[in-house]
Picture (cartoon, rainbow, N blue to C red):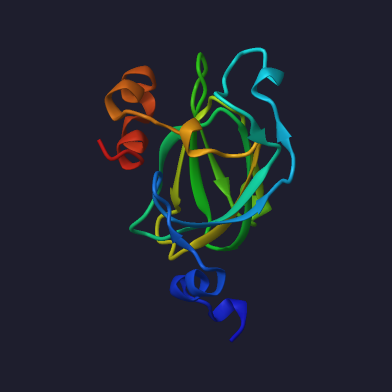
Length: 173
């Protein structure tokens, strides 16, 4: 079997992916740094305790899954590995939202690596007609579930009305 013959089920099995308990999709943590940074190192007090300096996951999306709109207290970098392209909605405080496409078709403006700054609301789904996509996500300081905040559909739609449709498709309520 070559990578071109893989199904989403094959990828889940080969990489040991499990359902993501917060945002949807499938994931497995692949890296945790061996070093911590103290909460006091951040003058804004955003962390309740020490954080790993970095973490990484594999992340898979299918047509019936999506990464719900959320924001973190850390920066994230998404990496495209294989499959179909992914649309990501980013909503920055005090700014216009943007949709970026994570994928390998550079000529069409897709990017194989996309950064999301801490505090930016973001959610993702496959491009229409896509079957599955395998991404990686690196977080620094490292991801902790207590730093995850789910975005509310009504609040986000009121603040970014031009993205009401996208927000509705990337939220559960």
